[in-house]
Every structure is written in structure tokens, then in C-alpha cells.
Amino acid sequence: MDCDEAINSSASEPLFVTANANVEISESEFARIRQVLLFNRGFNLDAYKDRCIRRRISIRIRSTHCETVNDYCDLLLSSKSEVDNLVKVLTIHVSQFFRNLSAFEKLRTDIIPHLFSTARQKGKKSLRFWSLGCAGGEEPYTLALILAEHFSHEMEEIPVIIDATDIDAATLLSAETALYHHDRLLEAPLNYIQKYFDEEGEQYRLSPSIRKMVSFSQGEMFNGLIYHGCDLLLCRNVLIYLAREQQEKVFRNIARTLGKDAFLMLGKSETILGESRSLFQTVCPVERIYRLAPASV
Image 1 (cartoon, helix red, strand yellow):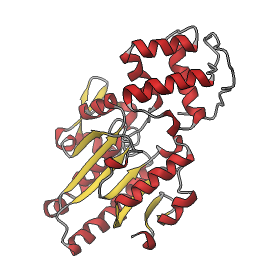
Image 2 (cartoon, one colour; image 1 turned 30 degrees about the vertical axis):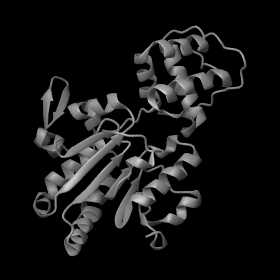
Image 3 (cartoon, helix red, strand yellow; image 1 turned 90 degrees about the horizontal axis):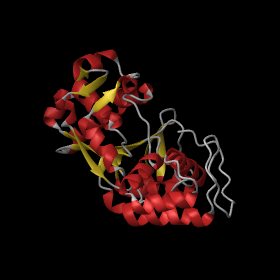
Image 4 (tube, one colour; image 1 turned 45 degrees about the vertical axis):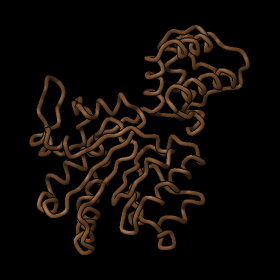
């Protein structure tokens, strides 16, 4: 979602909502909304870029036809469903199967073969891939499709565990049903669609054989307790919504969970900056693939 439109948050008095205006949210009103989300869902607004968050809250205020921001705060206190709706808007992460196809081609031709080879040399019994901020499941399922199509023989010897984590429970439930509109498949090669999807009206259902390869779980990426060892970690198009301090925290958590033979892939518009940069070395700058720096291992 576009976050370039700035929201003026300096107003001290609540404003009436109009159909075509951004909603100005005072600091006291923002604090009320923050408290409701933190108490009811453990969702911390401070972790995210302020401009993006205020704009997305404005979307929900307008859509609920609340006359003032304080009216919307009252609605949040009385409606669990609206809390869920707001969290969904705040965490929306639109994705597609094979999004940025060249990135998945790099995984298929170079990274995944290297991981199998290294695992075989070191006698590892399995590999673990992980999609952090998995949204509707398109990303981890894409990994599963690539493995099923190109590495079935290797997986007979070395099974691959695919984990997928997101903060939004409703989104995870949707991911598990694996029913997608055709626009989520625009970048998927035709042979995958024909082989692994069944048409259901205007939507496509992913085959059970692929669905069972992915395990979904709810988790907040700032909580270090969710992190566990993995060989390939995809954290794509998530960090761009986070404040720099929280980006640093995520990178430190990732550095602690990656082994020396593991890989990290970010989104095309993301990079590692600040103090965390010293923790990683670049493997492929074009596709934003990294490994732990030798000093970090």
C-alpha cells in the first residue's frame, strides 16, 4: 500500500470526517487507539512508521462513518470485530504467487541447490524454510511449489519444513484455505497453475499436496520468542512499513536465528542499514539475498 501521502497529526481537537478528506488524529486520540490495540491484540503501533499507520487508521474511520476520531475510539472499545478489521488494515501485505519472479528463479537455480548440497555434505536430516510476514500464504506456497516441481528427488533424502508466520489470525486462516483470486496468480508460470490449482468459479484452489507442505502460525516479528533456526528466511516487503529502530530489532533477531550456511532474502525495495549492516554479507545485491557476516557466526 502507498504510504507517501503525509498525514498532519498536529490537531488538538477531533475533526469531523468527510468522504474525501484525510482524518487528522490528535496525539491523545492516537494514544487511545494504541492502548486498545496493545491491550486487546498485543499489537504495538509504535513499531510502525507513523505516517503509514495514521493513514490506514483514517481509512477505517471513514469506512465506519464515525463522525469524529473519538467516536471511532469508542467503537473500538465496544466492537471486537472492528479491532480485528483495524489490525487487518494496519498489517495488510498484498502479495502474489512468484512475486518478483527473478527472485524465485535465483532461489531455484542457485540458493536451494546449494542448501541441499551443503545439507548432504554435513549430514543434516532436514532443511527449514521460513516466510516471515507471510500474509495470505502466497510466498510460502510459492516455495512449496518450487520444491515440489524441481526438488522432489532431493526431498526424499532431505525433507524440507516450511514455516509461515504472520500477526493477523484472520489472514492466516485465509492462507490455510488457499483459495485465491486470479490476480494473485498473474506472475505464476502457466505450468504451475495448470498442475497445482483447481478452478472454483472465478477463483483458484491450491492443491492439498502443496498446502500440506506449509505450517502457519501466528506471531509478532518483534517477539524474539518466535525465532528459531532456519536455512532460508524470506522477509520480503514487510520491513518497509517499520520504523528504523524496529527494523534493527528484527535484523538482530534474524541474525541470532540464522546459521552460518543459511540465507536471508528481503524485498526488492528493502536493504539492511544502520548497525545491523555489519551482521550480514551480501550474496546477491539484485535480489537482496544475504548471509551472516563471518564475524557474526
